[in-house]
Length: 88
Image (cartoon, rainbow, N blue to C red; front, side, top):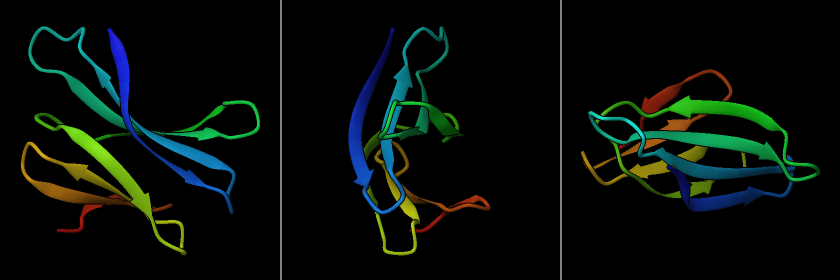
């Protein structure tokens, strides 16, 4: 099934960011980071982290960049309005 792990609320932008895992894949679980509107839950953005990945937590900075930990590599993804990059 599909489940969630890690969450970050961006109050200034009205977004709830969550790590989503889809365990229905036969090869390996698929991880995405989702942005949902806090005023109704509409999906704003979905970012795939690739395989393998294991998103365990999220945080954001004042500029709205979201950082997602990936403990399978280990690395940190930076998600901004333009792209997803490896931050560290």
